Image 1 (spheres, rainbow, N blue to C red):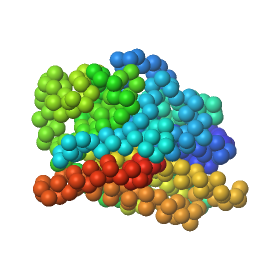
Image 2: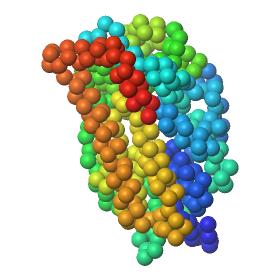
Image 3: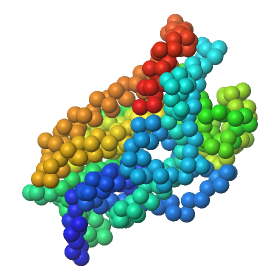
Image 4: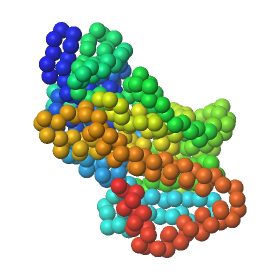
Length: 396
């Protein structure tokens, strides 16, 4: 990339050094494209040295497709494998069931249905790969975007000016780039809050991810290494506020009462964090010389466990399309970006419909619908061919 004292010329500038932004930069660099990352609060977990009792509160469930892609980018080899837990099966409960719907990897002749790992583990792996590619992160705050005849300029609060063919906005659900470009959003509140925490389980989880569906309430216990589990308990915001007024011991007792006897007693490790649950979708994923990826483009309910995978698929799609560009083609060409937008919208719309539909289905208080739901999940348990199809769908 060309530089002067205050001007940096590059092909792509990525705003946001979260996982989606980092992988976008790595994907562009592995194609031989010049890339610059900008983030005002970039955090390099260089000192991340967790112990058996110290766990990152932010946990991700990665699909097999995502893992394969991270391997292709040279990121996965830097992940601390001792902190990665394979998902061997999924146990899905709902109120009318006497036994869970079990989806096992072996049902589809697979060794695993993805894996669970801590955010800091994957972020550290991305930074190690960035170091190999000699891609530094510019710690600065964008203050303006200026369109120019053949490129776009990003102005920073440190007086630098980055001129690029394309801006990739990966700056999260409150994206400054999206707001600066006046791209609106469709917003839906689920009136729910997720309580997130890590626990030590008394019994071996055997790699099974367990999820309970109650009216407008879900709990997931995701398996971690060292007999740990990560809890995501989505409840109404009113109930969440009530639970958070309890002492830690009383709140843990509530968690145990809900989940027993699946894993025996659960012992809290660390704090419990609340996160409001919303669905937000940008009205457009692109603008002139701009593309939105990850939470900047779409935020989904965690029920499907696909938030970060959906963001990674944005980058996969963009990278797949940019590999087919000739050396003379402009990566920021609006018609090219329109093809990207059309390719991604169906995936996002499908995911929004799935999570909203599941929330409505299990939130219903209509007895016959509740009975039908329970009956349907039990029938799936008996149909091997359908379970195989569901396992394959869950691992993509």
